[in-house]
Image (cartoon, rainbow, N blue to C red; front, side):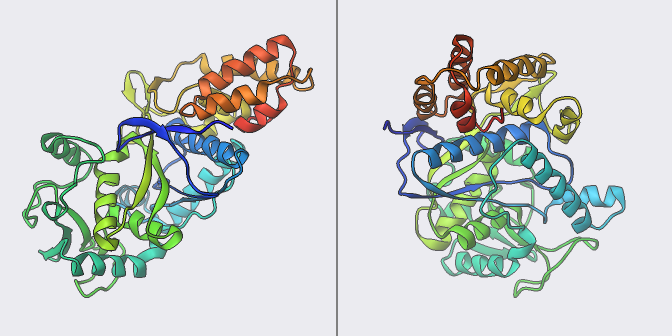
Length: 375
């Protein structure tokens, strides 16, 4: 059996991924304030294909996918709608789960909510403070990036690039309470209409990054085999998550960092803030979920791509061809697909060899099962 090779963001190379029999995987989940769009689905289906491939290779996989139900975008949307933030979160989380089930994603081992981890977060912040990597200022607790020598090495961005990304992505680089503009908040006071929890640093709520660190430590332990998310999370979220986790425990946080490329529409990255979105539940009204899944795995997880109106019709025809050959003659197709997936999860290559097998009348069933496509 060949060795699985995957691109590692931190090492900036395709390298062997050789975990033990049990694989510990953490994937950053949704902030549940709106429906699942195609960019979300592409990310989570990429990790689902990886899970299926690892299981096929004989591993067991413990995959944790968090729900960020304590965060600014959720609070802002709840204010706009005039509803309680937890009611909004519960409704959107349920909609997301329906989409994932429809797309034939394997169940995750757990999907813990950030709001469930407040005691863990308190303890985690205490560890970071005790080890001298954080400080209190202006009623908040901040991580001191100057104390963590390798800060920035995950994304390999320059300080100027990190400042620009932090400014774009809620990093509050001009906060006067910070010692350094890239310092990030671990705990801060809540607004009047936001939830607040008591701590020795004052009532408030956690920062975004600390939530994933605390949940990963609680659910998986100090070191994870693989951590995933979209490339937009490399900085600041994953860079900060790595720094505070290793500062707290003194151990390597993640052995392999895997990130998925973004999807564009009309020349711009799909995002809720811009509103240029294709929603999965809307697509499901016109196309069966297996068609949507095929449209996603047609693209490589590391390649940015643009939505086009021909994507779903094209894969409707592809699905029909695969189904027509499901009971065809046996061949070597499953081994060909395994080889493509071992090559940095080359799903476009895998789809191509299934297309060719279907055209020859060979059975497509086992290969489709490995890709999670229901025939």
